Image (cartoon, rainbow, N blue to C red; front, side):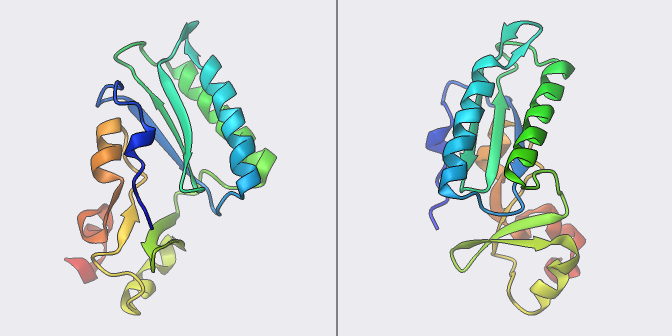
Length: 169
């Protein structure tokens, strides 16, 4: 599976640009990706902070992740702007019957495919060898563009999971 996505993020965004990742509980279909991308573009074109247009992007990656990014070095991101983005994402959830806020679902790359596993099942998947220390993990806890580039897709052994699971200590 090709994990290259950095070319989709504009180079002129500050490394500390605020980044939100919303992981779907299933893959989006091709038709859904097209429709959602259109809605993301409309949202992005109008996303502002106190009436000033944000320098922002909105994208779907790997047919599974909705990424929003706003460059706070250009326009300060207010709480109302964050609330607006959350309402928008909740509307996507409703319109496409998909969950985007379930932090109990963890996503990995296994056998060159995206695999989503409930947190409660991770230990057993490690024990049976489905997940190893070198399995790539989508670390959706990142907060900035720099972290997206450096810490989003990482081996399990370099993630927060390594500290929580005795198998990797």
